[in-house]
Image (cartoon, rainbow, N blue to C red; front, side, top):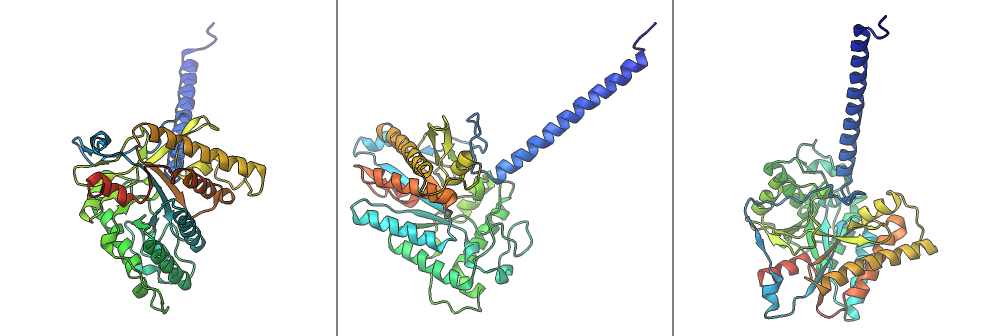
Length: 382
């Protein structure tokens, strides 16, 4: 007697393969969803296996020009460049705090200048949002919202002027902070145009307010760009070149290399990675990434506690270790990207300040702007 007739075997096989197919489908959908979330929150750019999630993309099919520090070292000492930057630009308090901190260091013979990658949506209020025409989105849509008030725009302009007057650099972080990894050249150029329209025409776009502040900045002074969430493609570089940008800082420096210039003239200045002993892995030097790695993107660590102090010191020392390694070897620039946010009660801004105090006063160290690094690599300054 057959215990498992052929038709039963066939039926069981169909059920088995159906189950396998469903499992594979579920896993695939889950992976795609996770990939989407990681791309949305690209600041978490290195996973637990220390593999890059967001890969660097170079806008060239031929070997790009690479700055050779050894050539320069034959005639002069190579500086250790430290580029400290901020994305966003909304918080008036953070404008004041960052500029004040730099002024205090400068007053103590420790030169420091920041680069601010601003979002121009913060120079428009919601009631005037139709002035913004983003690529592939409805008119008036911004992924980060708009300024909290008309008077806040006036104060924000004042702080931008204050930063420029003190030697800091203003660069672009786009208008509405959309992910552009699938955009065409025209899409990118549309967003670049929108950035200029909202930043330089804030008075016209917000006619119901009598602004007392006039922006002391023009389009030719905007030399650099950093893509929202580091979401990039080759079309972006073509658009940057067409729109007169000199450099981009949207990539990840895995191998601790010097920046390079691509065949269409854009300098690629990637964000640093550093080894974090506490987690025994390399992490992208972005405060958002560190916040997610450290406390899963939740504000769990409170200022005034021993835990907060210990973690500030831990992160500061990790930055210093990366600096010491670069300073003693090829002196590849240190690039750190913070935001105008005070996650974990200001822990990451405090660590950045501690790092700047310890590193910026060293011999042959330049804590300066991205444009000054480009000038150095181009040979415009010695």
